[in-house]
Length: 503
Image 1 (cartoon, one colour):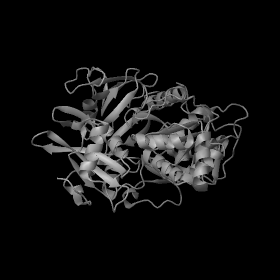
Image 2: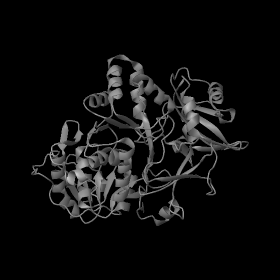
Image 3: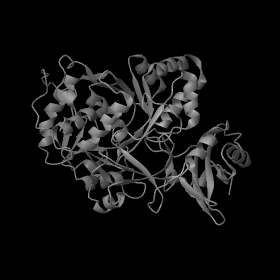
Image 4: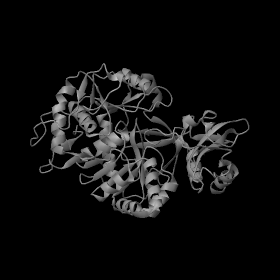
């Protein structure tokens, strides 16, 4: 098998000094990263099993994960913000032989029993013409990472990501985005998840390019790094929304940001749908389109708008090379028709191996012929572009005999000048089956738009049966670390503590 990180194991002549990763003021060349990871590799290999990584947004995390990959040992990234009970579950389930962390990191009590391996980025290790000898590349089905899902329907499950899946997804994105070793990726994503770690760190390293991590997201940081040679920006919708707000405010900061975004080769949003309203605001201010892609922990990347394709707000592009995608009805039959909504199922080399210690959950996640059930609902345009309408469990609303996707109603609400943020859910209704509920953060809390006003606004843009029957006002929408709205936290009546009307 081709090495997962060929630029580290066999760097092209003359490229050893090229920057691999930069976190703040700390920059590591390919030669330095290879030397640090190579020195750490024997300690990981000798730990006796998979290792946990305290995944702060730091160079230590990058070095730790690269060292684990070189050692052929699965790494389990841990979110430093995870609560004690959930962290105890993850540690108990994955049973790591050791935990890797920066020497200054203070680890919680639940990790105290694990042997600790400090990751030193200022260690005095020899930097030679190439890395220290390493074992043969593990087989393609060998686990590279075990990444825990968000656990919205129970305790988090550990998705086993084989080296085959990581390589397949990154190579498919190379094809779709023209990703090369000359690209410099800028982002501020967390490193305990697929988006920030696999795409945002391993992606550049597989290509022989560079990643600059901002540590903490800021419009100023984005503008600075893109203006200083950055070619690509990865972000989540919350980040792009904040960039749009800075651009709308005008002034010197907006001018600097606009120029930097306009000069980037690629602006990519993922992890959740980017509202059409923010798409248009960013395009209006910069002349550039943000493109979207669609993936999951279990599948890595499934679809993506190509760099040489047609950006289309509200879509996540066609399936990537090697990925098969279909839509199915609840009974498993094909969802046919130009406007048919069905569950996305995918098949290809990008898929995970299964859930750690959960053969039951693994079996339930796949059909008998190997298709993975994503739980995401979508439509497909005639040219193959996928439009995701939401999660099957929370975003598909069956009201009055219609199947309605929450996403298009949210986009319609965001077109109203009085709406800053919006989420849409369904709740039981004796007459309709489910009624549409809009959760709205008003642009002006002192003068929020009325329920009838918002219902009429949606009805005019979409159709009458898609208008919200209830509007509840909130000060903020609940979001996770990746900016995704946690709709289960909006279940009425608990979330109706917000300032609200409707009923």
